[in-house]
Length: 159
Image (tube, rainbow, N blue to C red; front, side):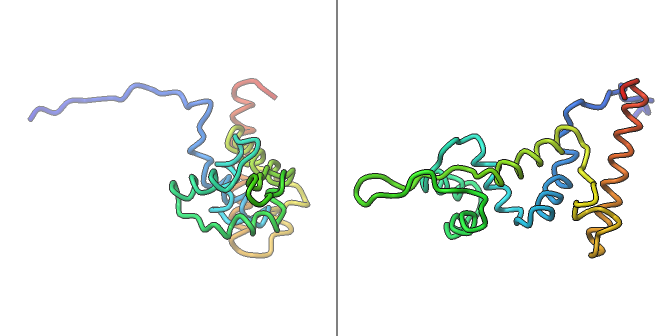
């Protein structure tokens, strides 16, 4: 077997690198808004639907393991709201994402799009206010990523 000096072609980083920030963004939103990651997945799945019913939720249950009681928990927590009440023998209940649910999903998408993590004093992951060790580690990671993004922008000439 002959040895070859293969050098891979230079690749430029992708502008939209969603997978890179997927896990940290999900973890950030889960912790910041006090929602489990499975419920966050459900909100992301339901976002394209303006209105949805139990059949749409059941369709998600076929995709990932999902307990039907979680819909009631999402409703009580204020992540979804009832758009139309069920009327017996007429129509099913119809739901929509609440303002809070839309905010969570939009925050997740914004972080994945920009790679910049919110880190102000009200934020649970602020290094000054973090109480748990995992929050402090996450805060350090978010600060490093934010600094990396700032340095990248300076290199490109954007401010």
